[in-house]
Structure formats: structure tokens, C-alpha cells
Image (cartoon, rainbow, N blue to C red; front, side):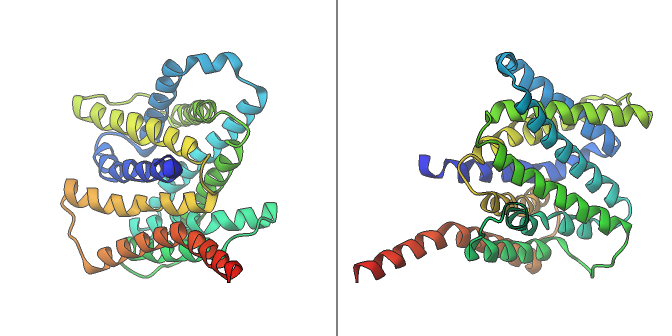
Length: 294
């Protein structure tokens, strides 16, 4: 079981993020998108500081800089996704955001000349096709919203990639604490500039915001950061792409969305992508071993 702790952590993260789709839809009945971001990141930062405040005593400049960079990527990605949604359709936004699955291995290749395994690239493409089937209802058309959604995907890809890089030398909890604090600071500066700092708090609105802050933000990103110590960045991106699958499942359960054959086919392809990424290396190793023995 410990051998797969990274995969299990990322799978749980994807499930939690999947629940965030319907909860975010509920929260939008009470808050603006920027208020939701400010609220969820503030809750996340406060919880992490309360629980892990002792980590602050040994905080290094390197951890602050690396965590802050992750916070910039994190908030920037969410902000671009939100603004992009104002100019394009939700299906285009979801699909283009999910392009981060493909971007991650190419970041590794271009910036670090790291060899990318064929099984990882194939898994990423399979996952992208599955996400397309889950998300797309019509044809893609280029507009400002689509461009912003693509930029969002790039920032999410950089966040996944550099999380994998930074956890090799920095404490995962410290990185999560710093990045959440940085994202919260940026979020509250943004709502202040926009004149949206007063959040309309009711029992219903508070419940949705607390869920997003505690589960979809604090627990999910802490799990992601810790789990990425144990898997490659490309495999992490593929596993996190299951967010779309779980988002579909929880939207059906909570918002009573209609199930279609296209949605089921997309879910099947995402699962196939994960199985390919998980089993192909073992298959190749066994094949080489068999050839050597022969």
C-alpha cells in the first residue's frame, strides 16, 4: 500500500476537486468568482497556519520564494479560468483548462531536457480525449475566453510541474502553507481593488465557502503537494485529470445532470489513460527482464 501512497493521495485529491464543481455552482449563487477565491484561499491559509504554525519558525528564504511562486501560479490559474468563463462556454473552458495534462511533460522536456516516456505521453493524450468527451458539447471556436482558458491550463501545468520539483528539496507542508498564504494575499488585494471585500455571509453561503476552503483547498492541495513526492509530474497530471470524471459523477448526484453515452465514453478513456500510465512501466521492465534471461 505504501508503494502507491502518491497515486492514492492524488486520486483522493481528484475526488475532492470533483466535488468542488457542484459546490462552486452553489457558491456562485451568493458570491462573485473573485470573492469565492478570496474566501477559499483565506480559509486554507488560516487553517494551515493554525495547524502547522511551528513550521513558520524554521521557514527559509528558499521555501518562501518557492511557495510564493506556486501561490502565484495557483491564483493566476484560477483567476484566468474564472475570467475566461465570462467570454466562452463552460464546455470550452473545462476542456481547454484540462490541456495542462499535455503541457506538463513538454515543460519537463523543453525547460529541463528531461526524457518523457512514451507511455506517459500516450496516457496524457488518452486522458485529453476523455476530458474532451466529458466536457465538449459543440465545436471549439477561438475567442478571448478560449485564449484565457488556455493560459489557465499553462499556469496549472507549471503549478503541477514545479510542485513536483520543489518537494524534492523543501518540506511539502511548508510549501503548501506558503503558497496558500500567497494566493490568499493576492486574492484579497484583488477583491479590495474591485470593491468586493464585503462577503455576503448567510448559513447557506458560509457552508459552501467553508467546504471549498477546508476540503477543495486546504486538504486537497496539501494532499497534492505531499503526494507529488512519490510520482512523476506527468503521472500526477494524468491522475489529477480524474477531476473531470469525479466532477461528472458528483454533478449527477448533487445537481441531477443527465448521463449521456459521450460522458461515459470520456470517463472510460480517462480510466484507460491512468491504467496505461500505471502499468506500462512494469510491463516494459518485465519484458526487458525476460529478454535478458533468455
